[in-house]
Length: 123
Image (cartoon, rainbow, N blue to C red):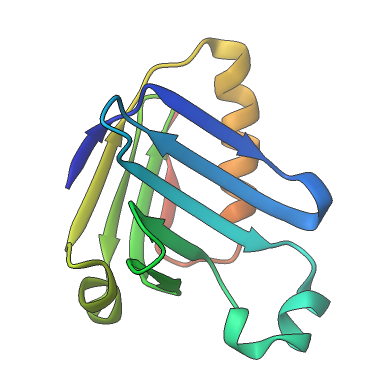
């Protein structure tokens, strides 16, 4: 699946890292993760990065095998469970943003994927 994001949202408000993309056709990719390890410990089924693609029925936790981010895009390769839940093996999001936003995006995406062995950021 490939989308060209027209809208991008990213934040680390209230202890949750959120990164979301939407194209002109209302297709979207949303990634979230609780930043407080205590929140995840209290809710073991809600651990890791939550991925949602176009609909809540296509979502779940710990579905990403590898992720590559840059100021111009995000590439996600899904693990077998992710392929089963999302019905896609790969998700590519292309986008553009000004440099000052790119710096904040880098900080947010790094927090979202903190500790994920398959994550790389390419400036």
